[in-house]
Image (cartoon, rainbow, N blue to C red; front, side):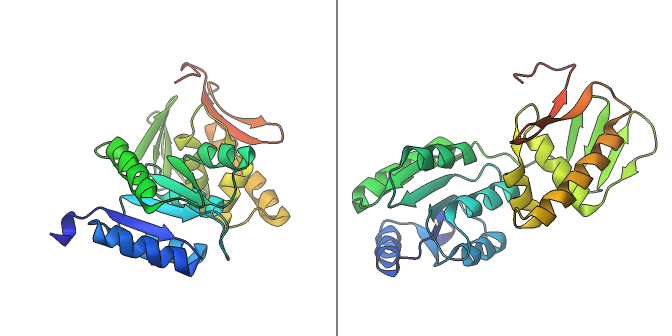
Length: 237
């Protein structure tokens, strides 16, 4: 049955390679949706469910790294394989820091690609869990759907959409660093100076809301980003 086929989003601007990969994977029993640039891929991702995203790094309109960050902000557990003509160590480090499951350097054989895609799907199958609607930290309960932050039994604090999205990113990365670049690209769509100043304002507002619990803090990581910490919890959590 077609519904049982693993669904792959393939974002690749090389028309020859993408056509070959699409045809090969379809013949091997996969349901492939092809996009030729990052913006198209993001729109497709938002409209359908996928089991694996295969992203070329050097794409027009939206590069693979930026696209991956946006995908992870929507569905953190989505498995990702990067395709690239580069083999630079720094590129691989960046790819894996985003949460990539594999990194395949061009040129590659179709058989090698299939084997590595199967391995990623095997590792990730059954591991996906629905994202929580509520996040608990310190004496707070953050309800993402309701856009509310509640402290103990007090009246909930209503949050704006941007405050809600930023707090969710911080909660997803609790006790880990959320980079400014990731937050800006995920929520504002770019890391321009204007957007960076705007985000600083929202961070200040969130700190004000969290002030009732001294054990909960949003810490500045100089030159990198922010970290939501709960001092009553072990930082290795």
